[in-house]
Amino acid sequence: MGTDIHETFEQMIDETLAGNVEREKEESLRRHLQDCARCQEYLAASTRVIAGLRGFSFDVDPASQAKVCAVMRQRAQQMEAAPTSGRRMAWISIAALILTVGGSFVDLQFGGLIASAFDIQRAQMQQGVIAFGIVPSLCLLILIPILLKLSAGGTGRQERIR
Image (tube, rainbow, N blue to C red; front, side, top):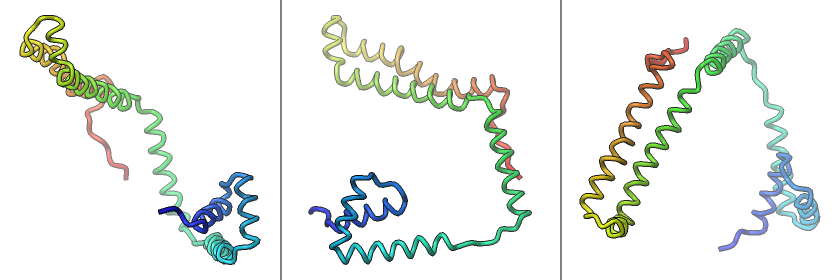
């Protein structure tokens, strides 16, 4: 089921009102709006809604605003001062997981071929994959986050912002 042409132009109207439409599409929309009453109504309604939203205002308690801004500034400074160990930990853990899954995939897909090429039993090869592939990868998954936290001087506990 194809998209209704009006739905396409309504989406273009939304993009135009948001300022995110290409010049060619805008020209196509203008030509369409000259003859289409339905899309003209949609444009008028959307324009009224946006004008109403822009006219909406509310009062914020200056003390509350200052408190929220102070907490946000403090948190931003903490994040800037924090070492990038969290990012490194995530990437290293992901790499270890990929190695684990990749090793299992290679074993399942090509284990027999590799075993016959090197004239070894499949059971011996599986033991090698487990001993030299999966076990070290799992150790990395467990030990690296712990070592990174210790090297950063952190305890792993997060302090609550008051």
